[in-house]
Structure formats: structure tokens, C-alpha cells
Length: 234
Image (cartoon, rainbow, N blue to C red):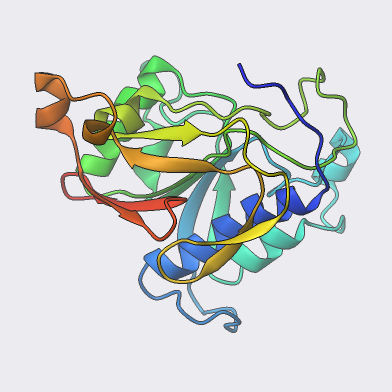
């Protein structure tokens, strides 16, 4: 496993800015960078370990306080979306899957997807769901909690089986420069630091028969920090 490196907080800006920029560019009806709050916003489910919905280091009192300051990325997204945070995509056995209530979902640096979540996410996308999956293979930035603390954002993002099933993986260069740089994501640029590269699985190690049948129609964008896919109806 690559050695964890502490890098200036600008790295965090790149990850969360990516959530906003990619949601704006790739989802219809969200092209205005500074829109007024619409009469009816799209419902959006969010699964993340990052301080996007709740402020970093929030306690119970601040979570229930309606007047507590929200993270800037949440405020920006809420101009377009009505956000619901999720801990699980599929919920408890015998209960309706939470993901079924939504047409749009952002998964950003999650703590991990269970086997049921992987299976449920695959089915949901194939049925027409719109997914933005943001993953940082080596999370940078400083946080108020220790790396060993369970509240710390996921430091090393791992490709879940469902992404491999769609025909993609992530390549990471341990020896890349530490400097913050601008990278092309296909329709603009984003600040990145110690970034991974999205690649098509067939270009890396070949596909099994099952993967060939299940893979999506994917295109690598820009400098390889993003990809756009059609999987079934989603």
C-alpha cells in the first residue's frame, strides 16, 4: 500500500470541488454556475466520508442545531438539489432500499460499499439511475481528527467491485510530484494533487466473459481524472 503523505489543505478543495463541477457539467439542467434556488430542486442522495454535508468534527449538538454553519460545498449543491445523506444504499433486509427513492446519487470517498450495496448500485444504475462517483486514491489535506480516528475521511480510496464490473479501474503513480496542478476532466479543469488515473480495464489486464457482458460504454475524459459511462439505462 502506498505510504500516506500529509499535503496542504488545497488537496481537499480539489476533491470537493470535483463533486460540484462534475455534477454541474454532466447532469442536465445544472449548467448555470450561480443559479437562483429553483422552486423545485432535484432530490439527491449522498454517501460520503468527507465533510460535505456535516461540518468536520461535528458533535450531536451541532448536528441537530438548525443554525449551525453548513459546509460550503453543501450550500453550493443545495442551490440545485435537495440532499439526503445515506449510510447504506440498500438498507436492512426486508426493507425498501433507500437508493430506490432517488434518481441521482453522489458517492464521494465512501467508507466502503458492502456486497449488497455493490449489487444494488449496479441494478439501480442499469435501471436508469444517475451516479457521480468521486474517488481519491490518496486523500490529501489536513483534518482536525487523527488519521486513526474513525471520523477521519477515508484516506485511501479503493475501487469497488461494481466499478470493475463496468469495465474501469484506477491507476496510481506513487512517485508523482506533490505539487497542486490543474487537470482537464473533459469539459474544464480542476485542481488536483497526488491524483489517480482512470483507465479502461481492457487496456490494463483484459476482461473475463462476465465482465465483457456487464461492462458499460465508457469514455475516458481529458487527462484521465474522469470518465463518463452509459450502463444499461443509466
